[in-house]
Length: 86
Image (cartoon, rainbow, N blue to C red; front, side, top):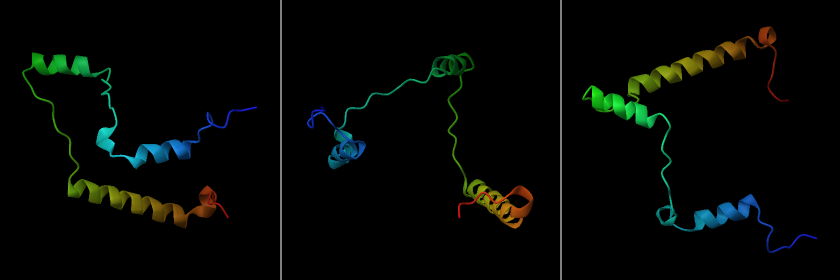
């Protein structure tokens, strides 16, 4: 027989985690395995890491491509097979 006090659901756990401020939670930074080799390259070439940002034009292009693909697949359901539920 399971002890009811030890049984914890994900929903209960998430409820506890979201009840307090996020800044109060202990957080440990996990170092990426590629970080050391990249840092060595930056030092070797006296370079700084590039900051990658998406531009409004880039987001617009992504939205256009998504919409084009959606229109294509919606118009060709017979050719590719209808995989939508229902």
